[in-house]
Length: 157
Image 1 (cartoon, rainbow, N blue to C red):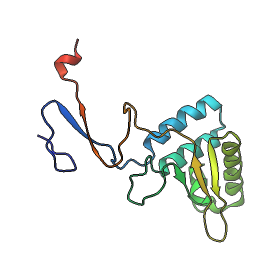
Image 2: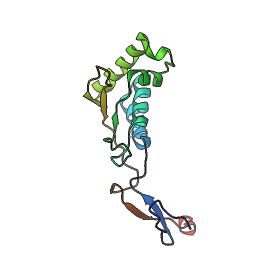
Image 3: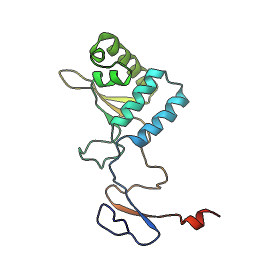
């Protein structure tokens, strides 16, 4: 029988799920794809938004104790997301493409600038996306939550 991360053996018929499991951007990225389609974002804005979502934490329970849905990658990293591989990711055309995509995302309200970059520090953005796990009515950060599982025979009704 499987043992969960807290070392607890779940009772029969119950799946063990840790609400604070380390997920980096997977739920935010799903929201980003759907929102980008609804807002008819340009290709570059959509690519950058999904990349930003994949680079941020979905919740506050993470090893770096970072705020959820915060992106603070440098322009060069953002340029790679737009298809500018190194060494072109440090070029003026790459930075211009990043700037345009960021302008579109901030203008549409999908991201919010928290801090302007400069003096060796990257800009910081908050992604205005839902990053909650689907199917969970609530989230208790860092606690073990036991969810009932569907028995194979029950599911075939």
